[in-house]
Amino acid sequence: MEQRNIIEWSEHSEYRELTIPSGEIWMSESELVDLFGVFIPKLRNTIQTLYKEELVKPYETERTIKQSRNLYLTVYDMEVVLLLAFRLNSYQARAVRKELMVRIERDHKPFEVIFTNVGRKQFQ
Image (cartoon, rainbow, N blue to C red; front, side):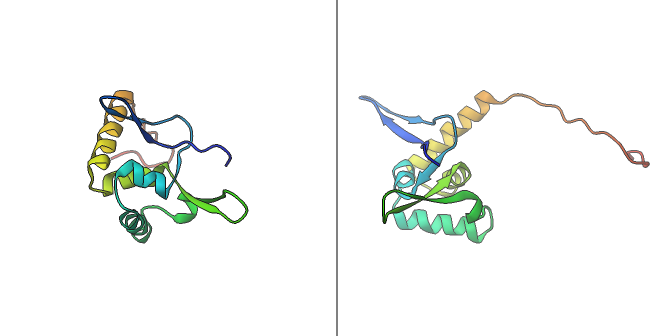
């Protein structure tokens, strides 16, 4: 993992805008604290709760990257970021949820599900 993409607030003179880049999202604790406007203990407890409730597995959603000789950084993927957005209760977390919902609704394309029967029994 060489290049990391992060979700962040971009500051403008009158307002703040949420910037969600394309590509894989991997964010550190300090970046998540800035994004959601919570303190590190709250963030860590919420992440541990996600693991304890088995909503995500650490080995699937967490990576450790080497920053320098003796400095390592733990980063979390987009799945953890999404779950945190709906678990944390802060002004910034609500704004992230709202923006994510707007983007999902805007990019939503209708789809059809087709069932086929390959076995002997027919659908009842």
